[in-house]
Image 1 (cartoon, rainbow, N blue to C red):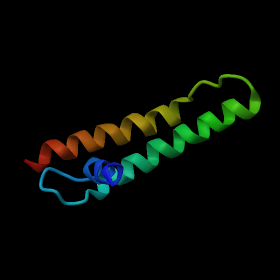
Image 2 (image 1 turned 135 degrees about the vertical axis):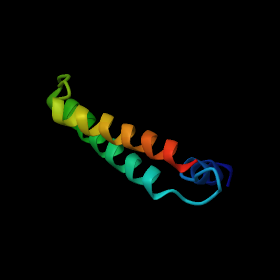
Image 3 (image 1 turned 180 degrees about the horizontal axis):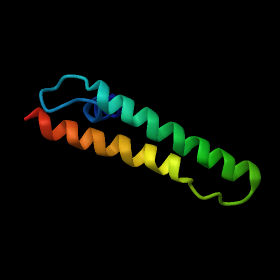
Image 4 (image 1 turned 45 degrees about the horizontal axis):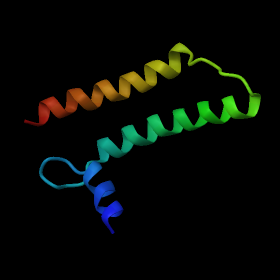
Length: 72
């Protein structure tokens, strides 16, 4: 049960409530990284990120950071 509490803590905000923004950022970044890893494994080469993927990852992390700053 300790792992479940740690996962719950990751997706909780400072007040202890579940944060849908954190979940959404995790899904966006996790999906892109999974797809990138899958492509690299199946092709046997290392494919670099294109600008759209990198912009999506950095943009979602930036928006989360901006939103966190506005909560207080």
